[in-house]
Image 1: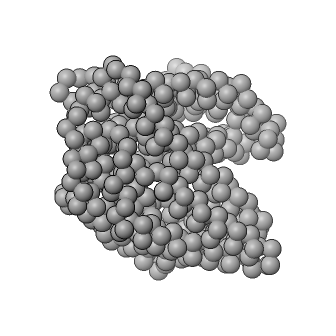
Image 2: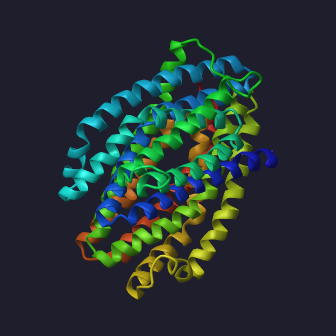
Length: 434
C-alpha cells in the first residue's frame, strides 16, 4: 500500500508545485510591464480562485464517483461519469465565461482598482473568460484521471504546458518571433493556449483504446444527481474558504503595509510547504474511494492513515525548517529588515502547525474520497469561523496586534486537525453510501 500511496502522491505534489511556479513566472514576466499590469493579473488570479472553488461541484463530485467505480471494477460506468462531467463542465464554463466577459471591468471597479488597472485587468480576464471552457475541461480531466489512479500523466502534461506557457509569454507579451507585443493580454492568450494544449493531450488519453479511463457516451441521470450532491458541499466549503481568507487578509492589512508584505511573502513560502499535503490528500482521496468501491473497508481506512503518517513526516520536517531558519528563505524575496521580521513571525507560527495541517489536508481528502463532503464542509467552516475568524476579529478589536491574529490562526489549525482525526478514527464515514 505504501508504494501505491507514493505513486499517487509524488506526481500530484510535483504538479501542484509546477502550478505555483507557472503563476510566479507569469507574475514575474508581467511585472516587467509595470505595477498596474502586475496588479491586474494578481486580481485576476483572485477571481480565478473563486471560479476554481465552484469547479469543485463537478471536480470533487466526479472524483468520488470515478474512484468508487474503478475500485469495483466498473470502468465503463466510471467513463460514463466522465461524459456527464464533460457536459456539466461545458455548461458551467459557458455561464462563467459569459459573466466574466460581460462584467470583467465591473469586477475590477468593485475592488477599488485604478482606471489603468481596470483597463488592463478587464482585457486579461476577458480573454481568460473566452477560454473558460478549456480551463474547466482541464480541471475535469485532471480530476478524472487522478481518481482512476493516474497522476503521472497529469504531471508530464503540466511540465509540457508550463514550458509552453512560458515560451508563449515571451513571444506574446514582448512581441518576439514576429508577433506583435500584446502586453498583459499576451499573457492571457499564452495561458489559454497552454490550457488548450493540455486539453488536447488529456482528450487523447481518454479516447484512446486500452486507457485506464475513457469517455463513455451515456448520460446517467443518477450519476449527475450524485455528482452534484457530493460536489456542492465541497464547492460551498471552498467558496466560503476563499471569502474567509479575504476577510483574514483584510484584518492583517489593517496592521500596516509592512505587516501585509511580510504576510504575502510568508504565504508564498508556505505554499511550497503545502506540496506534500496536497499530494497525499490526492492519494488518500483516490485510494479511499477505490477501496470502498471494492468493499475493502479496512484498506480504505488504513490508506488514509498511511497517507497522513507520510504527510506528517514530510510537512513536519518542513515545519522544523520554517521555525528554525525562516529568514534565509525570506531573503530570496526581500532584503527589508522590517518585512523579514514580519514574514519570519508568520512562518514560525505556521511552522509549529504543520503536523495538524497535514492531518487536515489528508483526512479531509479521505472524507471527500468517501463522498462525505458535507461532513468535511461542516468541520472546515465551523472551525474556520468559530476558532479563527471571530477570535482574530476580537483580538483586532481589543488591540492584540498581528501576533494575536497569528496565534488565533495557529490554534485553529490545531483544533481543526484534531477534529478531523477524531471524526476519521470513528470510522462512521466508511459506511457512506453514494
